[in-house]
Length: 382
Image (cartoon, rainbow, N blue to C red; front, side, top):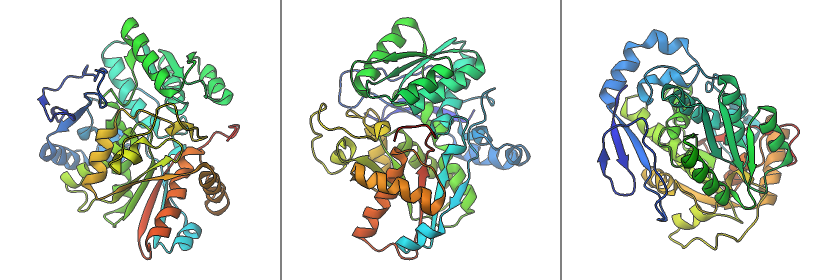
């Protein structure tokens, strides 16, 4: 491994690398989240020297020199998803290029599989038999699918708004489902209490520093697919802040190893009804945790635990945060299907709704944008 240590994002404190490191809640607004650091000069050499192996893999372990594991895990093959051109939508916004990073091609149809692949690899090496996470659906379904493949027991903690469809998917994979009486944030707390009590391995991406390392490979693949071509905007839905924060790190690391020269501007999208990250970005105090309801359940996070990571990445690239309403998301979901042939999960359709907002605020003429899109399940309610 080319890991050099860990950095505590809240204080900047440098710590030695520890594969069992975890950021337990401490009662503060921002938990003591950790970030993995690397020797980028060595990683660049390793990527060049392992060119043959690099070319032969299509999963996240293609990028092993920039991952916190010694070897590829024996897990479901996550990653290697296509960038799908959407010329009809590009024309609508005056864009030179609009690309959809189609994460529905992952084993359980979502980007979360990238994180799960790395997490499960570490769980294996540390001898765990049980894994857990809190999720409105996608992360839990991802973990359940990977656990079923590996023969581990999955404990999924879901909020009371979790759809019957998603709960049924969890049970199909054999997960032990714990339905909270409260929202996602309460389910998260319940999962942490149970996980600590029973000694299970955590897939809670906001607190496990190694999960974002899998997610950042999404950015690696975008850089590689574009072959050095400029991309102006990368847009992703944001709940806890993990996904877009990881993607931002990925783009910075591609620059660090000489694979790219510039950083695209990141845009994080939240639902208008629940937008604590947008409010923090604007320097405002987030509203009451109990307020607001949205059908974008995957980003209905009232206390984002990885806010600091995301906001740091948005600042580093001169990006921004936007909020869109459910009607705009529903319209965007239909447009993705009818004009790009992509059946997107309701939440990830917020990316196209955000592009509408950007186009209203400024000219996008001649620019290039990438939307991070996760696939909806065909029997999903919304």
